[in-house]
Length: 120
Image (cartoon, rainbow, N blue to C red):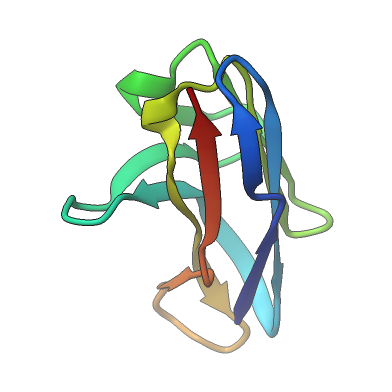
């Protein structure tokens, strides 16, 4: 299973960016799909996850500003980031918990990371 993310870049504070991630491979079911982020010297932290189209979870620092959406038919997840702040600067990682075809147990996967830089 591979996760391919895109959409990072440089934006001014107060601006918006949209991240997208597509999962590919021998996928039977994606249980959870979402985003985490990490800055140097800190632990990776939750940004947002979606267990289904309507069941979502957000990190406290992004609530009300970020919105996650998932397309189960296309195995994709997107993150709309609004009102960006300098402290949103980080490498954003796509995440998926997946049942592969023929596998009994689910496995977690990470994308390669995409850098989001917010200038103040």
